Length: 171
Image (tube, rainbow, N blue to C red; front, side, top):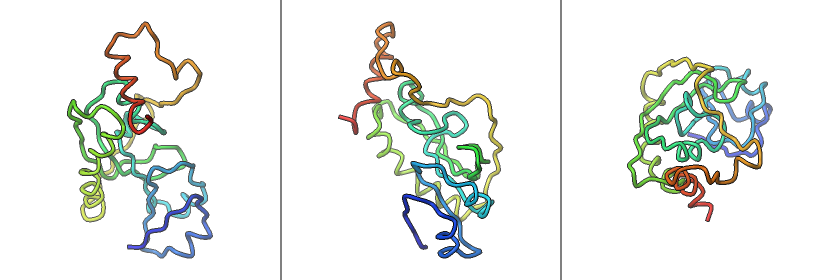
């Protein structure tokens, strides 16, 4: 396997290092992959999404999962399209978090034991083709200043969940 880690994706670079058997993965990308790259590698470019892409899209999804007290999810590999987190799911595994996993550091450590299984399933088994719905998902994000503050009208469990989300690694 050849791995290249880049902070900017350019089609010319990819054409130099890829051949007809190459597949591309986006892993927690901090930027949008250009549409000319997606179009050129159609059906050979994938995104790893470490939470149910059917329920949570965009960035910071485990933060929103923790604040919503969701303990069951999936990790997924889906086709990368020109719409963020919208491509068909080709491989997925169910994950259930124990009650003692309540912050991001614990979450990511816990997910590691599932990730190699997911990627092996993707590489060596038949793919699924789960078509995603454009409805019923949570698009997290802080859209206003008030979203980043505790609402003191919340009950104690909601406040605890919010605080746990902002615990490690953000200390």
